[in-house]
Image (cartoon, rainbow, N blue to C red):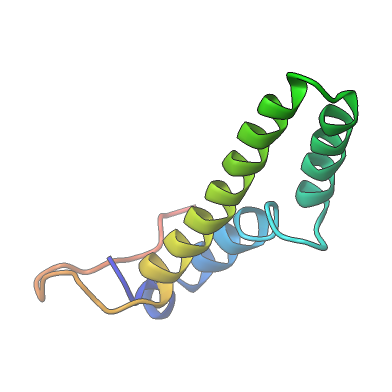
Length: 90
């Protein structure tokens, strides 16, 4: 969509707060993943494959959550002129 933060400030704030910080340091969602990955890494052996997959998954999640936030709310406007984005009613 792009550029929705001007039309949907409440939605932007409600999406950003729980969505963006979770996979990024220093927020709690990052640290819980960090602890799980550290525990798996310490087990060694074949568990390192699980660790690598978990790390890759966490990095992909952080990348795409950031990308989605940027493109949907702060990126270039991509909706038709006749479209009128608006906040959902309470």
